[in-house]
Image (cartoon, rainbow, N blue to C red; front, side):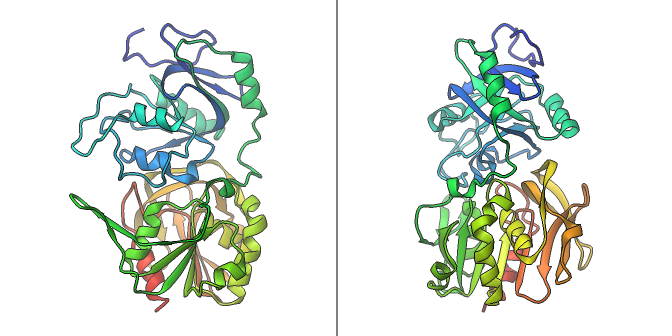
Amino acid sequence: MAQSEPLRMSDTPPEGATGVLVLASGDIIWGRGFGAAGHAAGEVCFNTAMTGYQEVMTDPSYARQIICFTFPHIGNVGVNEEDVEADTPHALGCIVREDVTAPSNFRSLGRLDDWLAEAGRIGLSGIDTRALTRLVRERGAPNAVIAHSPDGTFDMPALLAEARGWSGLEGLDLAKDVTRDETAGWNGGPWALGSGYGAGSGEGPHVVAIDYGTKKNILRRLTNAGARVTVVRADASYDDIMALAPDGVFLSNGPGDPAATGEYAIPVIRKLLDADMPIFGICLGHQLLGIAAGAKTAKMFQGHRGANHPVKRLSDGRVEITSMNHGFAVDADSLPANVTATHISLFDGTLCGIELTDKRAFGVQYHPEASPGPQDSDYLFENFVKGLA
């Protein structure tokens, strides 16, 4: 089998196959393994971003997910110590079209395949990623097992049983698995070429950020907007948060089912709302805010993941190109009378932003902090922090 030949679905492994994706449906997709050896069960999704694979792989929102990158050349700029959103990759693994090549970038400090191996994450190359993306679009995000065996030997019945035995993301609270261990201040600022990440001023309004799986760049954008930031665990109590004397509370992104995380998060958020605490939520935080206000969330058929998603701002009709990563959404039809829609997706009309009319609270489904992605929506951080002064 030539190195450039894409591997496709087959019950029989082609020559040279050292990796496999086994779907719960019984479909088998062969590839060439890289990164760590082993196997892991999760949900397959696709991401349409053309850049930022290192940020994507380290985003805690991707916990228990296997990412199919639609852009064919992944790994060609290598990896470095700055383009990460958490200290380790949280995605279970990645699926790419072309083999990972030697990096060609002045910022590179290593190879993607070596980085994944060190982190215990599996990669598959040689996959027809267009066909796999089409499968997810038509069938929905499937449960699957990704596996890499350097000698090409696999226990296929066991892998299929593992894929079929995994519970899926519905009903799964993953925030507790990715949250930080303790309360800590955050003073990191934005990045600049040649000097890396700066420091925040630490002199503005005090924002307590609840870490359900936050990306580092969210915290950087808060400090860049002038906030002094303290980060607390996902299960921090109302009393824990209020003891820090916040001027506002931020609800972070994160993985898993918001209804499951809401078992302990919603009572805290409702108390904060009752105290008229200003609140800003992103992604999972937005979904939790919606539930706390009386709305419902639902699992999406395929989800939204990429750095090129158009969102319409309903107040003035402006279209923002946004970065997205979510598999659940707030149901627009379930919004109570005191919650208004502020943004919608121009891909499928799903709800992408809410605001409470009787409280100082709002949230967006997408990622205004980018990393990767455009910065059209960065104004949301400035609006939030300015409103606390």
